[in-house]
Image (cartoon, rainbow, N blue to C red; front, side, top):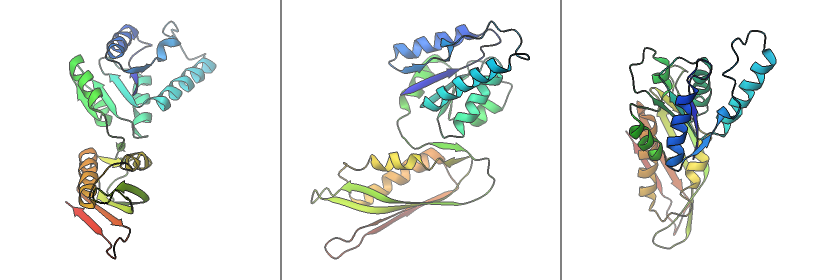
Length: 236
C-alpha cells in the first residue's frame, strides 16, 4: 500500500512530515516522498509561477499514485488540504492525524478516519483493506444504481464457476461510491467458494460499512443452473 504523508512544508514543518514518514516506513508501508524536492526555502511564490506549476504537478502525480493520504493536521497548509480534497474526490482513503485541537472543519469533513496518536495512525492504515473507495457526497440529495455484469465466483458444491449480474441501489448520506473501484472489488470474489446468499450478504456488508447510507439494496442475478435461476436480494 502506497502512502503519501501531507502537511505544512512552506511554513516550516517538514520535519514533522519526515518523522511520520519514517515511523510508517518502519511499519513496512511504502511511502511516497514529496520531500524529495524541497521547496521550503522559497520565501515568496508570487513571482515564481513556473516553480509553482512544477510543484503542483509533482504533488498531484504523487496523489494519483498513492493508495492512502495521511494528513498531519497540526498546522494550516494550503497545499496539503488541496491534496486531500483532490484525493478524496477520487475515492482515496484520507486518514487525518490530529493529536491536538483542530479549529477547522475541512480536514474532518474529508476524512475517512481521524486519529489522535501515532499508534492509532498505524492501526488505521493497517486496517484499510477493502478496495471499495468512497468520496464525499457534495452532490445533494439523490439515489444511485449501479450494475456489474461480469461477476464470477466458485460454487462450493460443484466447484464450477458461477457467473452473474450484481445490482446496487442506495441513497447516500455523507459519502458516495467511487464506482470504478467496484470492478477491483468484485474481481476479488473470482476464486472464492461461496453460496449465492453468502455473496450477497458479503457485498451488502462491505458496501454498507464503507458508505453508511440511508438505505442500501444489493441484488444478485445468477446464471441458470439445473433449470433453476437464482435471484438473491438484501435491503436495509
